[in-house]
Amino acid sequence: MRPETPHILAVRHAVRDWLDRFPHDRLAVALSGGADSLALTAAAVAEAQSVRALVVDHRLQEGSAAVARSAAQCALELGCIEAEVLTVSVGTVGGMEAAARRARYDALDTARAGMPVLLGHTLDDQAETVLLGLSRGSGGRSIQGMRDYDDPWGRPLLKVRRDTTHRACVDLGVQPHQDPHNERSEFTRVRLRAEVLPLLDDVLGGGVAAALARTGEQLREDGDVLDHLAHQLAESAAVDDQLDVAVLQSAPPALRRRAIRVWLLRGGATSLTAEHLYGIDRLVSHWRGQGGVAVPGGTPEARLVTSRSRGRLILGLQVDDRYVDSREID
Image 1 (cartoon, rainbow, N blue to C red):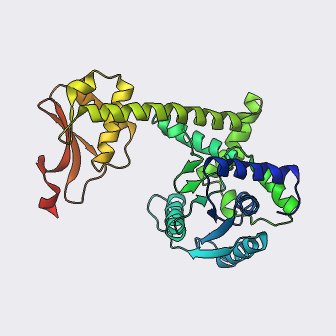
Image 2 (tube, rainbow, N blue to C red):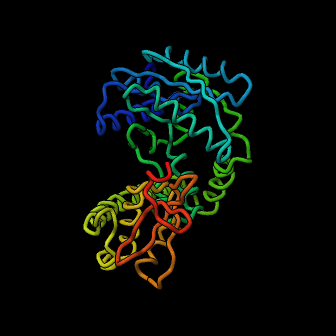
Image 3 (tube, rainbow, N blue to C red):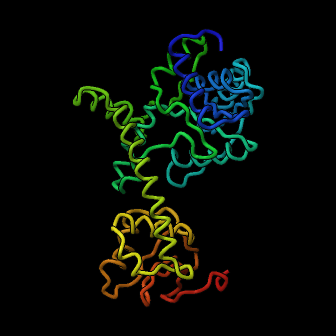
C-alpha cells in the first residue's frame, strides 16, 4: 500500500484486527471493482502474506466483461498474486437480486481453493441488513446482521463506514466502478441507502447506521448463548430422532422454539420462518389434537411435516396424510 492517510489506515487496521482474530496466511478477496472491495483488496495486500482476487462477472449489464477485466488488472497492480474473473449465469428464482447473490456466492465458493473469502461489506451495509431483517418481523435472529467471520466468508470492514472506503480509494489513486444497479430505486436496499437511512438520521439526529450495527452485534452475542442452550435442550429431549414433549414443556417458550428449530434443521427442514416455529410450538404448548405443520424441505412427491404422537414430536415425509420412509419415494 502506497500512502498512509487516515482513511487508508482505518481500512488497514480493520483488516489487521480481523487477521489477529482469524489468522490466515492466504486470502481471497471478492472484488467487484467498487470502492469497498477495492479498498479492502489494497488493505489485504498490505496486511496478509498472499492475496488472490476473485472478480465475478454477472453479465447483467452491457460491458460487464470489460469492467471485470479492469477490476482484475487493478487487483494485480495493487499487489495481488493472481486475479481471476468468474463468469456466471444469473437465474430468475426469487428476483434478480437474490438470484445474482446465489450465483456470486456459488462461484466464489467454487473458486476459493480452500481460502477464506473477504467481502467488502461495511458498517453501512450492516445497518441496511438489520433494517431489512426488521421488516421481516421474524424475531431477533433476523436482525442480527452479518458476522465478521462466517466460514468461509470474512467481513473485516463491518465497523468501517462506506465514506471511509471511498476516501481511501481517492487517496490510493484508484477509480472505483460505479454500478448502475446501485442507483435503481426498484431495489429495496437502494432505497434504504438513498432514502430511509438519511431520513432516519435527519429525524433522530444522526448515528442511526452505527446504532443499528451495534444492535445487531449485541443480538448476535445474545443469540449465540441462546443457541448453545437450545442445542443442549434439543439433545436432552431427543428420543430416536424425535423430541420428547414433556422435556420441551419444561423449557421457556423462546428456548423451546430454538430447540425445535435445531431439530428441524437436522431433519432436513429449510427456510424456516417464525410462523413454522410458532405453529410447531403450539403442538407442545397448546395441544388439542390438531394436525401436523408442514415445513420447507420436502420433495416433489411428499411434504415434510411435523406432528405430535404419543407425547413426541415427529418429523417425516408425508404423502396423503401418511408418513413414509424417504426411500419409498425415490
